[in-house]
Length: 470
Ligand code: FRU
Image (cartoon, rainbow, N blue to C red):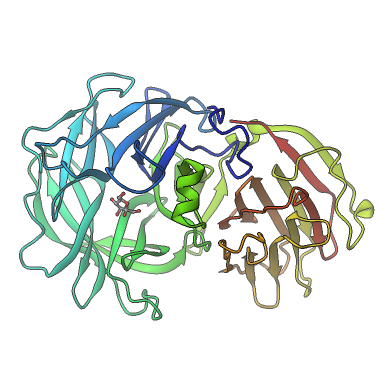
């Protein structure tokens, strides 16, 4: 991957995936095919703004280094996707790589199918019978209907489509099929309940629902949407009579920029997730930059015994590590920057730990200017069991507002607070104890906004790695 088109752009990430230029949103069609990872994504090849949705495409042997490939899906002026190829998933249908995506034509957003006959997944043939579902279920007052997730159920296929139902909110609508081309509507797999909703902002619908089995449970990830992204929740529970019975609800990533994640099972059987890290600066700034949208690092999703999901950076991310410094806790002075021995403060991984059972707020500050005029804070508050990311003072640019984002994060009494923080120019991704994630976008303007400081008493060294470009 190369960031060459933007050599002087100090906000453009260096080791997170993004297209060579222009707009990107959701990850789509994630699949591990013949030993290689394929990442498709919502892409506008004509500008750094949302519009004319295509599927961009990249391939990787290691989940971390990506090669850009030609666009995989483009709108067909005469087809049901004339106005856009929206999000969808990839599945292996008896050895045939198959995409289910949303074709947009005028007011219609309907499921479409495409298959590939080449092992590199470069060319895709759209099914002549598209759309494969002619309309949303007539018995439901749907207010939105798009995005797909599919799985095998014995010899059959199941698919869910994200939806909004008037007076209800979000839903995932369940269909069955033998051949992926003819679908029978069954019923909602699950609908939003009052307990799931965010009372401040009623949901219009769920975008990008993602269903998968994990251990002995089922999980469903849903993107709450009201015309704008609200948040990304997950449910874990069981399927009973083809209905999702949630036992637990949690947040996938408490940062406002993380949206529309998609996961897939790789050839090792791991559940790997990518999410779109939206920009947090005005559209005009995105257009002026010539690019918009970044992919999160790959995250391995696992089920914990209490029914919660854990999100940890994929171990492969460590291949990006270059020069390492390990600064003993005794060399870290309060109120002074951690001496990072030449590691650039805008492209690094940091690991710090604080003792279990403390009551003080602990954490790190990154992208910190000398006098603190710009700073991004990552804090764990043990008394409130919250992990927070504060980007309100990350930038002095008046057009960039930032926010304070917090995740509920209960730790066991004997559990240390271990933070891993990935800084990549305008991206900050934080993981607490390899299970709770918060990410954000920051746009510092000062050349010295590169400092790292520690908040609280360390229980070990500060480990930092310079990260290689991906
Ligand atoms: C989510 C989303 C999807 C849709 C796609 C369009 O970000 O709005 O619901 O398929 O993006 O680009």
